[in-house]
Structures are given as C-alpha cells and as structure tokens.
Amino acid sequence: MVEFKIKIRELKPINIEGGFVIDGLPSVGITNAIATESLINTPDYELAAILDSEIFPPIAVIKDGIPNYTTNIFVNNKLKTAVFSSQLSIPELLHREAAKLLLSWSKNHKCSLIISSVPTPIPIITEDGFFAAGSTESANSKLKDAKIHIILNGIIPGIAGLLLNEGRLENQDVIVILFNPEKEKLPDFKTGAKLCGIISKLIPGASCNVSMLEKIAEKIEDSIKKTETETKHMKDSIYR
Image (cartoon, rainbow, N blue to C red; front, side, top):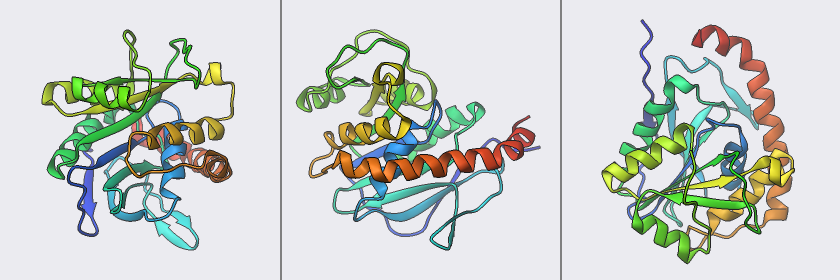
C-alpha cells in the first residue's frame, strides 16, 4: 500500500533562525510556483534540501545539464530565507500532509514567519490587486507595516488555507497573499512577477525588480507547464 507521506532530505546545514519560509508548493494554480521560482533565480539562493514521496511522479527535471528533483527547498543565508519550490502541482490528497510538514520544518528551524499565496475569486478592489490574511495579531501587524491590505472575510483553499488554520492553533505567524487573476487579466508569469514583489515587501533586505523578474518568470511558466503536460498521464495513473 502506498503511504501518503512527504519526506525532507537536507543536503547542507540550514540556519534560518528568526527568518522566513516561503511556500511555493502549487496547490491552486501555478502562479505561486512561478513567483517563488523567480525568486530563487535571483542571487544567493542555493539548493539546501529535497522533498520526495512514494506518490510523487518518478521523474528528474534536467536544468543546465543537471538532474533535479521536482520539489526542493532553496535557502538564502544572507536573508535567512527558505523557499519551498515545486515544478509540479501537489495533489489534493497531500495538501494536509504538505502543510503540516512545512509548519513542523519551519518550527524546527525556528523561523519567524511563513509566507504563502493563492488565487481567489473574491473581488479585489485594492490598487495593486493584492490583499492578505494573517494567522495571528503579530502577522497582521507585519501586513500593516508592509502596507498590504488585510482581508476581513473570505475562504482560502489548499495548502495556504491549512497553513493559516494550523498557524493560528500553534501561534505561528503565517501570511497568505491573495490575488485575483481574472481582475488582473494578466498572463500567469506577469502576475507571478508582481506576486514576487509583494512577497519581497515582507522580507527585510529583499529587493525585487519586477520587470527583470517578468523575463525570468515567462521562461519558468513555460517550463512548469511543459513538465505538467509531460507527466500528466503518469500522475493520473499514480493518483487514481
């Protein structure tokens, strides 16, 4: 019987105490994956750990001639930031497992804030097309300091929603950034680049050149969609 578990294999020492963990595991659409992949293509991020599961498709993603797992953790030691990044959408049956694993790993590494993101059908009337939810009063204070609008009512699905609920119970600061692709009416890569800019507001010392990131993000979107297409039949047989 296949066990629905995800395991983390750390490849080098990781020190993000007091820092940040960014959830780039796509569970509702791929915009957050594009944003986080764009982020780790900026300087000082390096592969620090891999995530694997018996029910992940058995594939290697080749980048610049080097084989890679589909789901990884990249770390920027200067910013004390870790990014959970994936080239494949996480199946719904693993959402709860993925959220709990991300929370426990973040707690073990003593991070101060977890940042996630998800598209929403809720009408967004803010000037930049984004707002957010926090798991604690402390998280909401961080949003106010960054001048990011806070949602008062709504439903947040997927891994992001689970992170908020568990974060509230465990008194862990979690922020979920919400965006509405239909309102934005932009390609995924453009929204992903803008989302990367919003995430950067929450990380002291981070900077984000959105126009530069758009060029990176467009290539990343093509890569993710190609990987999804090439593994679709394989995933369908595994997750049945």
